[in-house]
Image 1 (cartoon, each protein chain N blue to C red):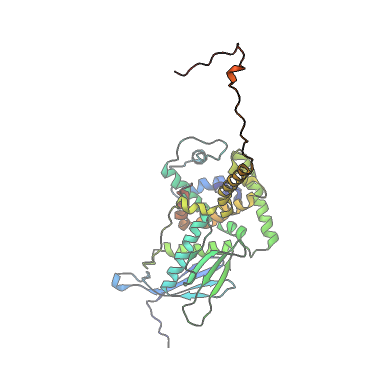
Image 2: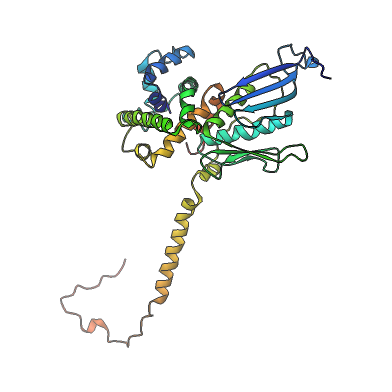
Length: 213
Length: 156
């Protein structure tokens, strides 16, 4: 039997390819009004032509903490994965192409993990629905979401492919090794028999050698 | 990125002024010239201004960019979507790249290597796509913090 609670609220955030629906109740003990949502009872993410995702608050937090930093790093031109590969949600660049892979591990035993391939437009839609949720003043959930921060130089260097990063030092070491090998291959200079001093054959018109001060 | 938006919207210059007014920056950028002066602080421009951009001006420009990207999001999205017919997507990209190249040639310094790279039909394709993707990800109010953080990156 399902009891419909008059207090239960559902908020829906739409984009072209996905729709996020969060359900919950206002936290009356915290003095929240009827329009606000302070206790999350569940959420669903519907994709066009894809399986529907649903979960609890921890899953929503995991989705936000994986997707938002991933999008933030993409704006800086850095493509790297976020989330835990063994955990509920991981997102990263697709190994098959220019898209993005969203890897989901079900909390229910027996359910296989799910991999969704998203194109750039679908990723942008997902980021926008999460933005809408985070900016909605009716949502009073204390979601632990890191705010975007500038990247350090050490992080930004990952934008350059490792082959290009290693090209200069490897080239330098190779050049040094080659020069050393050539130097080793050169025959050592043979000892010349001692000659009479050059002064004996010097011309008289040569200028005298000046001493150093 | 502002130039990308202008390439997407034929009336982009006017739309930027209109948007700045609707976002409450009318006193800061009362006309196109004032907006253009602030944009000229970009060192990649053909005629750039010396000196630093004031932080309030920079933030206002970022707000305008995010607002404009939000307004043009359907167009940006259609360029990035893999589910659209390939021929249609190719036509859209061709149109966008044609306009973008014209604007780059008109306003940017062609001696800059980054401008040359963007103008390169083959090597610049990835860069142009990256710009459009960034526009999609910074669109709207939520994108403002991402854009701001990326502009404060160590190498920027």
